[in-house]
Figure 1 (cartoon, rainbow, N blue to C red):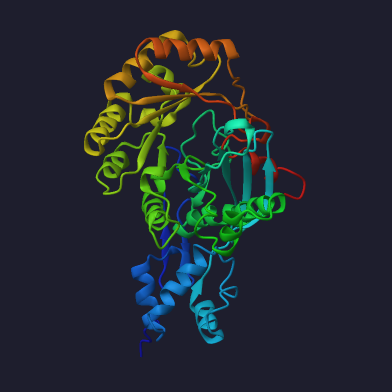
Figure 2 (cartoon, helix red, strand yellow; figure 1 turned 90 degrees about the horizontal axis):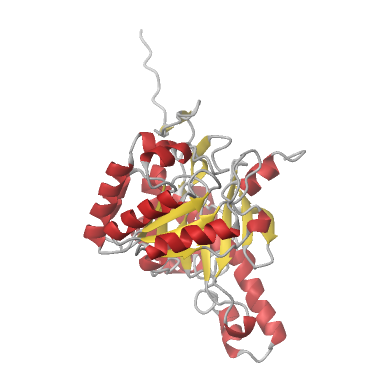
Amino acid sequence: MRVQARRRQFPLVRRCVFSPRFPLGAVAWYSRPVQQDLKNLTREELIAEIAKLGEPAYRVDQILSWIYPQRAASITAMSNLSKGLREKLAANYSFTTLELVRKQGSHDTTQKFLWKLSHGQLVESVLIPASLALYGERADRHTLCVSTQVGCAYGCKFCASGLDGWKRNLTAAEIVDQVLAVERHSGIQQLQAVLQSSPSHDSGTQALKHPGTSSRLINNIVFMGMGEPFANYDNLMRAIRIITAPWGCGIGARKITVSTSGLVPQIQKFADEPQQIRLAISLHGATDEVRLKIMPVNRRWPLKELLAACDYYAKHKQRMITFEYILIEGVNDGLDQAEKLAAIAKRLNAKVNLIPYNTVEGLAWKRPSEHQCETFYKTVRRHGATVTLRIEKGHDIDAACGQLRLKTEREPGG
């Protein structure tokens, strides 16, 4: 008698990434139960999950309040939930909480955070303050640079993120928790410092009592950290929906920028999204010949196709694109590139952000002199384009993408 094999009681999950540098072992099969992560769920999804547990609907807003405004680090910390509900949540759902491995601050108050994920891999986030306010007091606006992948498969020649290849995509929960974790480790401490210096400061007192309101530390988000955001498109967009939701992080879509190396199909798809999210393009070369030296992705999607996709985005969104342009000595800092860059930006009504190269250990390139950077900037401006030259923030803390992670992993015992 033939015995039929018993079917597995849990799904098999396949993870796969297609990229110009497809890494060995990039297709992984996991044969273990897949638990939903509470930080991966929208409010509507959480309503359905709570109903399955037989709990009343009002529990949903209690849970969301603990996750987002109060930035709870665990299910156990949700003290106004019954012990029985906390046990049910812990048994049925995971709860991503990034572990802080290292935090570095620089003289301009830029801070870099190195996080350990549940499987021991490392990712980075960078908190960047606005320019100092009047009289030199601490600025009250902060931008968080967020990672979307462990490593990167696209091999941009100036970037440390891809030196060890691509490992995996981050989940939406891991993306969202970078925002929450930075505020857990920085926001409240800064408010406490305000209270210590001015105990009668009413707004500071209220912020500590209600951490979801005036204690908001992060005002802007740029997906410009480790990894190519558009190579993790679905998780990226789910994270953005949670970050922008009023029940979530509550950061407006217009305060969010996604930076891509130039994945044309995803740029077009992004243009069709309903939210008004900003787009930045890692250009770094105004001709195919120069850009290909820096950006291997240009082989797959050359400038003609990339700029057509940018035009599609600009017309659909009626929003200004930003071209990020890292200045590298002797590679792309010639004045002929400045003139061509200005022409591209003017045609698309785009803004140019010039960034002096951050030295990366293991890469031979150097940043141009201050004089050359200034000359390049003036040339772009003289040819009629909107352009900025980035003021240095974080050059002394391994602030280029992936540097702190590589440095930590290569330390003895790392």
